[in-house]
Image 1 (cartoon, helix red, strand yellow):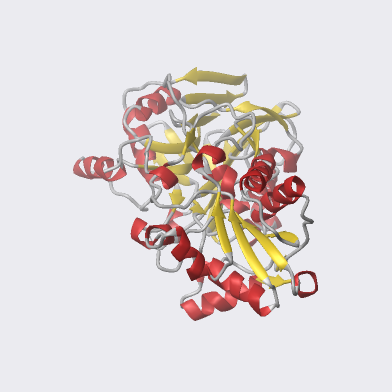
Image 2 (cartoon, one colour; image 1 turned 90 degrees about the vertical axis):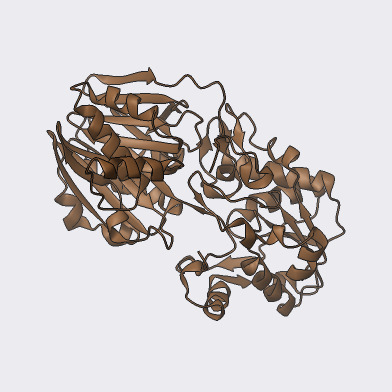
Length: 460
């Protein structure tokens, strides 16, 4: 965790495809994973189901590194699931790459999950005590073991899943393939996104609508919190396994995690970030020459601020698309060099100017400090930093990888002290009250625990 940069990090992206036409299942899943790559860059995997027999390939690396034509052409099946994963120091091993594949009493099963089970250790201890041996350190394998244990009762797989939902607590968008079906499950609070689409007569379920777009599928609807969706040759069937009275989608999906071209639970991610910029412009009037955004999630906020304020927007940075994440570098000096390689200021556009710079969040502060130094070196006259989220003060336990609260810079400095630490002329965060207004048209509630510490599920 010491090597994280100044962002929170999403855990996973999932996709499932049930083929009722003549599509290549593995290739379709691969394209979907490509669109979900922003949700996890540590490993990628695909498992396809051929009449109950599961063929799979997974490894560490980006989807484009893990799969080639030879691999994809040898993954034969009628339907399947895919997974991209973000790894931290605790779970970055190859054995944790998804999907998780195992044999159980009814045959073979593959699972891909996005989320975190908060009572995982308790459940793992119980399973250890009855002889279960784990091959990974993922929550997904714990879920798989619980489903396998339920299958001893000789009940349908969806009933096994429903019973397991009463045992696990936390966040999950879970895809399962076994026998002749794909099962999609969203946790009772809907903390992680999951949606359903249709491609001709075939069905896709995935983390974000952008994966539907890339394969040419039509969006049908979001999977409801607490819902189990079963897809087989007869079509789509739904079971409302848990009748949740409230929902709590992670607000960071709109702030940073999701792609801007996605629509989640009725709200456009791009529009949400743009709206944050508009609100900041209304609440925080700054005398400046230009507005710029830190790529990529800061750009819609900058555009919103510019539109509302009348101050022109311009490119402040060029982003190198071929540089990996800076947090993987082993020393602070190397991380700082990596930031400089990733972003380069547009000197001709910013020299001598009073600049408003939009970014999505400040977590550790390390990358923000380096970006401000770049702008100063490039000859910027003033830097006014606007942030489209409140100060991050609390760790997440539901599928977003954040530092321990003691490492969160907002807990160690006042806003004035943080302004001085970053080296900016002014620093403005959007309020939590205003942030929750930004996902226009949202059809669910939001989890804001990383800002206010009000966790929707008790965490011990």
